[in-house]
Length: 105
Image (cartoon, rainbow, N blue to C red; front, side, top):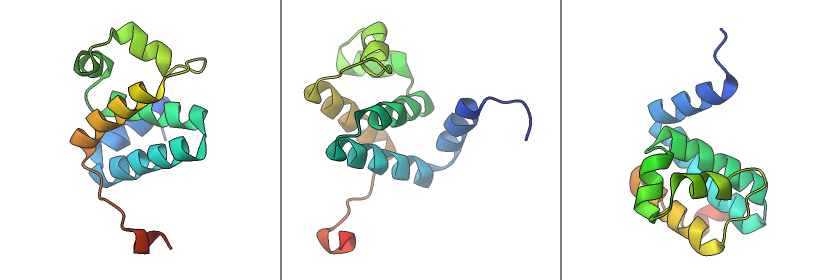
């Protein structure tokens, strides 16, 4: 497979495959709802890296890039309003399909 780090391959795949990015976005939302904060932060970090990058996301959120990195780090504890703002910004980029209730049953 080569010597590219796994994280780099994941981010590259997300950039090249909009459907995969949509699935990862949806999984991040589900993880948040299920209380799986560590996985939520990992997925959001990957999506940010694959889309606009941390600097541009920080500008959109009116935060410093350092603050954004910190809140999504392994030890980070982002507030719900920050997670909602990140998800909103990513939704504008990823354009996830809305799942209807009958599709989830």
